[in-house]
Amino acid sequence: MKRVVGLVMVCLLGVGALFPAPQVAAVSSGEVTVEAAPNGTVGNRIHERFVSSWPWYVSRASGLIAALALIVLMLSGIGQITGRTFRYLDPLTAWASHRALGITFTVAVLVHVVLLLFDHFISFNILDILIPWLSDYKPLTLFGVKLGSLYVALGVLAMYLVLIVTITSLLWVEKKPHTWKWLHLLSYIAVAFVFVHALFIGTDLASGPLRWLWLALNGAVLAAVVARLWRAWTI
Image (cartoon, rainbow, N blue to C red; front, side):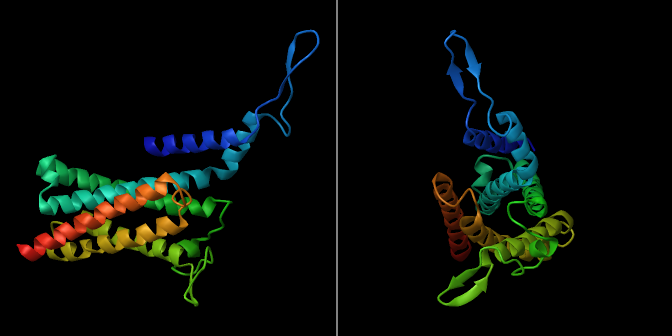
């Protein structure tokens, strides 16, 4: 929650920087007067923007937190299989941390999705966020084939995969370990869906350093997956 609040404050400071500061003018008597900012004070304009746009900022922040948490989850989970995670954490701490981070990731995803319903910048309804390809946001046409809102659909599908993995991990890891193990493999599909979803529809990953960071982090996950498959093939 502290991370979410911090990211929201950073967003608000960025918005505040877009507004012009009050103009300062000197008069002949040597006194300094401050002219009133048009359309109300800067503080009032920031407050109005926050009231109308806070779901958008919090949704973006929670999306970034979820993306980062997913990367750490994948690397730590694969590291537990290959043994690399245990170089830094004992098995009990590693498992407890992985479990807690998984819950945090799921909560961040749900916050990200639910707050889209209250956003005024992009209009989503309950069916748009529950049914893949129902939304018409950013439709994609590839090689003449209309794929609809593929990027949104991948996000919706990833949400369901995340819920399946999280719920079964909480309920079946000890009672039905074999079933849990196979269902847990859905996390690899989820991370692929999230990668495409965030890369092509994420506002903060559209360009710049964050986009390159996202590519690099997913490259690290891909390398870890290859290492795991190589280990499984050679052992």
